[in-house]
Image (cartoon, rainbow, N blue to C red; front, side, top):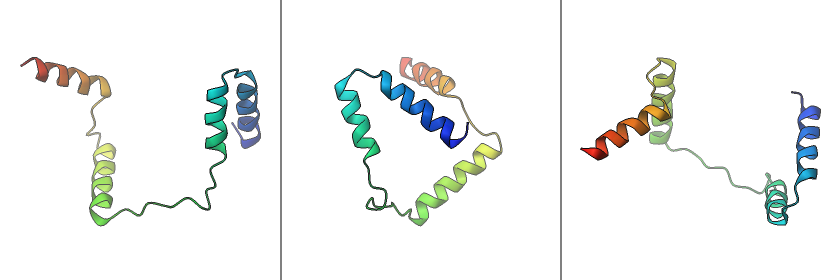
Length: 78
């Protein structure tokens, strides 16, 4: 989906919203001034953890959310 199509899809969806609170929230999100927002700078440890995670992902060393939930439930039952 190109940018114009995506914009049109979003506008159509927004036009169907009747919930004033949701519209206020969306307006706030869309009003965020990205130039004035601060960027978070990662420290060396955070960069290392991210790189390790990416390596795990590339090597297929991942676990699904369902498996994590199942293993957690099993552990809690012990």
